[in-house]
Length: 368
Image (cartoon, rainbow, N blue to C red; front, top):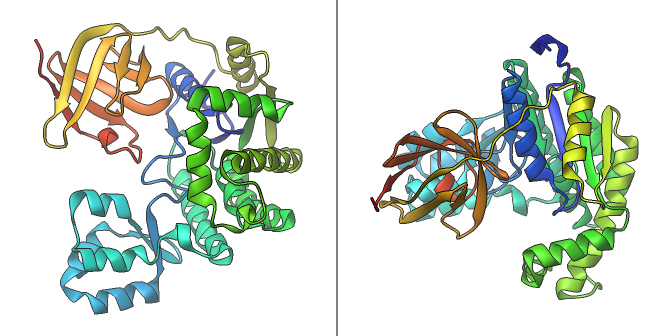
């Protein structure tokens, strides 16, 4: 099949946490690439993210001019690291913090414009500006974009936690759909009929502390007022999340593919997805790399290779899959390991909010 026959330039993957979005995004990316397509997977924690907001400040043009006037000695740096959109100017706060571009006073001033702290009305305006910019960028590219957790998950969290009406969320999403209509989006939605099964799976997979941490992060928001505290509060949120997602799925105006995943037959689900997208299934082999420890001494990060697995700097063990002779996909991340030489490992692909994934970061083998 030629590229011209692939009419959809955007594929959304949605579902509650622990429903396979990231794993299947990686599978789809590798399948698209093995079939000759230029594809990009935008992970929910990618940075800079083209549609979502993690550690990002946004200022109007007037707000930005006021900032520059207050800190004229930082104007050259601010102009260098800013990202200009139609209505707003954005800053990647992690990039600034990690590279110490600005002094603490200027950084503190920028953080007052962190989108996570915006009221919902202002978030809607900033988000639509970002989605519009995203659409403009897609028009310039000949590639398929895989977006996980962007159109449902991030928006449901944002609106539900503010106790916003469903009609307001529906109106907001309809405006995004209008911006993306020309790209023929496809929605792949993973779910379990019984949401409690997903909650149980999450608890077994991530531990009860994960639930508590999310609740502690969001407990100050309107949703959690007069609701159970701790893990039980977040579980109630997840139930409401699925109800909202089901309603959004019903009114999604483009092609949509639902997958009830209770039986856990992932090979079948993958084959069904590829069939719907008219993509030929290609066998992607599990890789076997030399056993070794690679270190980035400047930042103190360590990656261990153990044959077909890697242990990342957080201690998480992930399976590796062959991309090219010296490049390897990571199980459920868009990050690519490039073994430039037996003693030199370079990070490629897409970078996330975890600093160890910074593009071009070099890890050198320290045990021979």
